[in-house]
Length: 631
Ligand code: C2E
Ligand code: MG
Ligand code: MG
Image 1 (cartoon, rainbow, N blue to C red):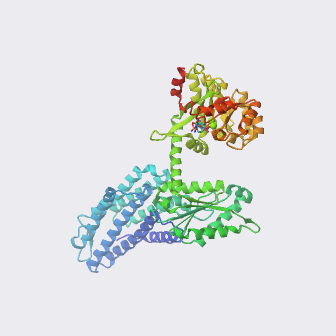
Image 2: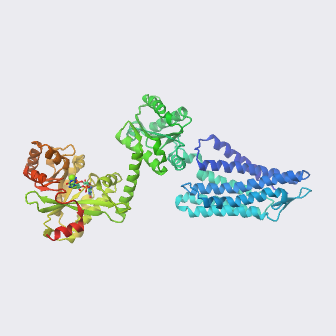
Image 3: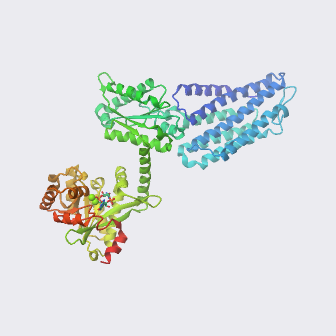
């Protein structure tokens, strides 16, 4: 007697899943297709299992060919069901989605062989037998079905363990979990063949998969009702080149401030209205919300881009009414990926979209068409970021020194410490490339500290007086300079190497003067600890003499462009300025001295120090010690 007790509730549960699943927004991605396939195959398997078992029991007078056919269909579905769980696992764990030929063979050969044996059963009865009286019994190769099932579950478990790094701990546990449930199911089915118990275990596996990987809530952003960042990442990762050429993002200006002005509650309502508007107006597009006021629309027809943008712009021209009297007026900017960028690395495209939206948001730029060059730039930045991380981790930032000479004697008087890091090929990355990135992600603080320490070490290890060196200038980024613990950190390093503070001059730029009060406070505190300051790149920004006068600088460095402009077309401005700065009690250094003629010119207008390629390029610190130590 077959036991059907479990089957009915199982069918109801799976059916409910199916109905619910189809009423929810879904992305056309592999993991979703695989899940639908699992549910459909499972339902069919349940149905055929019941029908064939029932027929064997109650209609055994039926033509044995029909009974045989029913059972063949059941075994094929049974094999398919086993196989699709393996497919699901590979989709989860192998994030790059690529399957090698070897893997395809490993996957397919056992199924093919088992399918052939099952089909041949119609003639040879190797898997099962149906006697003339309609009695069912196992054939000599019946175990083949279970060998195949075990093979797939074990392969699935091996994949989970092998690609453990690709998934989170939670995903790992759930993935392993549903495979172990299946393994238990197969084992119990062998032990208790007359209880249709395997179906219960597949149901449990399906529930685990649903909760851990397929729950629509995992892919929906709750405020806007649109798909979330994780969903966009999934779509990008498996997007075939050219399938979705339309990738259009827009961002709400000053989103953070809007939340303060309109309250979080009203802004959330606004997001929900925007989400609904987008879904209703563009039913064929996939709508994503990436938080911080950033939406992305993905579709198949690039030619519609302008029309879509116009519709969105028009809607944003009027207010979003989020309550009785509350109207949100929102400004937006668009960022769109040019179709030729679609062939770029998916991960990179995703980062590009995020970065572009953040960029236009911070610059309030009206529109941005992201070209392949910009994507490459972002890739370059990614490598640079990595190089910065490695340099910090290994403390491998290199100290280069460039001489600063006395303008009259042209003798070495000081030097500027300049940072260099290398990429994975050992090529030097210039500071113009890595300093802005390190400033953006805050790593400049550690980087700057390491540079300062290396400079102190250089001063400690070398007889700098013999070189004629009175001080070394160290550059300070505005971000670093405004930290409250800067003075303590630097003082501790000076102490460690036993270096008097006045041997190091700290170069800051006018950008540091934005928060003038804080700047003054910091400078005074550091001056009291013995540090000296130079103002770098003077003339590059909005130079403010009145402010400069109130700060305790000892030296001002003229920006090289400023110097070159004067050299090209002499006027009274620069000489007057140099004199003014000197009257304020500061010395003056001219940067970018590339010829002796320029050196003479700058000396003649009153500059005290000169720095430039005509004297020396920046060179590695040990080379510097070798070159000038002998003189
Ligand atoms: P900077 O502080 O104004 O440094 C002077 C830059 O001018 C150096 O570029 C130097 O190589 C270059 N230079 C010197 N003489 C000449 C010349 O005659 N002609 C030309 N064309 N260039 C000359 P570098 O080393 O590439 O550094 C660029 C900028 O990166 C620096 O400008 C500074 O702002 C920043 N930087 C370098 N090292 C550090 C660091 O350790 N910390 C911080 N925060 N910034 C740094
Ligand atoms: Mg400098
Ligand atoms: Mg400079």
